[in-house]
Image (cartoon, rainbow, N blue to C red; front, side, top):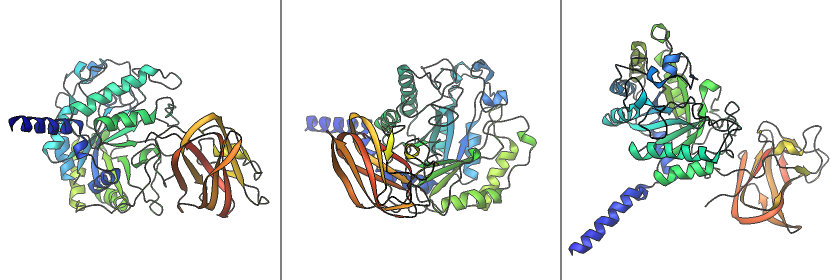
Length: 464
């Protein structure tokens, strides 16, 4: 009997260690996130001392010296506002790490205070019943993880840092990734594989949501490279409440910038009622959780005016109950698009809006069919024996593809994948199927509302 209990205990310990015993479905995790409604964002690091959101990555870490650091003060301020979680930027673009890391000397452990800020933050939040999230930049100016300079070792370095964050600091509700597939970072999801990093995160913490902060170019009708649709308001990304239906996150700053500046303590901050009426309430109404950044000063404390404003928000707005019930959404696209930048051809186009505009990785441009064409056809050429098991079609907002067929070419023969009415009225149509091999695929439009206009098509080999 004792041997039986020993075996049972060992099995339970193994399950607990794997994390899978508590694994939830993606929809459950998305709903949990939407139910949080409102949280605190913290940007704190070298930029706090250099009056710059993009801090010089070559300055000595000893400059970082918040002698009065009190993460408990931040957590109390968040609690007073009715917030349910805290998200801290553990590594911004300059590469300075707020945790005890063995991957680099550029961290808080070589700073003026030599304290693990992330641990203190996580402990402070959890002790007050709040969840913990973090923000992490793929772009790393100190370690020279830079556009057109990506090496295989860079992925290993990123994984090593994520492993520390995800194994040494308890449950991380969500990981917000930055500096990836953005016009200003110029590091694509192919340079550093999004799918590889995404699956690595999930292998350590299956319940950790992955949200990429640079998905502005992607339509709001599907999840591309993120478990949540994200909107960085300070970068001009705004949620369209009339169309929004995906679980989402929007973030903005209480002060004018992410990191603290010397004029912040004396400035007049946005009033509590406007923050509630213009951000929290309308976003929560469409399944969007709002994250508000408050920047700690060089002492490691939130300024008095920020603390007061957060408390005022808590008086105007009460976090009552759960958020709106989210709709079912297709699983996110996380694989590389093998159709991107490929040669496109087909039936004739309207004016200059020719075929390659549907493979240019720009959802604002479109291939538009000539009005005289009876069955508009768009054909994408691939490498010989390309393997794929998913195809996406994104139509123009002024055009809805009502019915169409998808074929692929293998050994010179065209074979049908799909034919019929569009599976959804939404802008993005996602087709998933068993793996196929071919050197081209095409879309034949059988019926549409408005002139046929296709913004982007994609082909993917998903790991399932």
